[in-house]
Image (cartoon, rainbow, N blue to C red):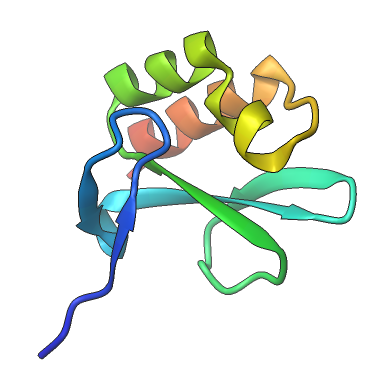
Length: 84
């Protein structure tokens, strides 16, 4: 059976979708997609604090979406992995 893989915007490693957090941009809104099915352009980050910190430092999501992404989104992603 095929397992879909995506690339983390921080570490640039390919991993199964289930091991990543999906961030989606729909219009001017950038948010965490817990369901993995929301419409819009998606980006993925590994479910670990190091990748989230790296993405924040490099402004990886801002570059990927070509728009400003607030630091609170990175904090929300960190909280999401703690609550799993």
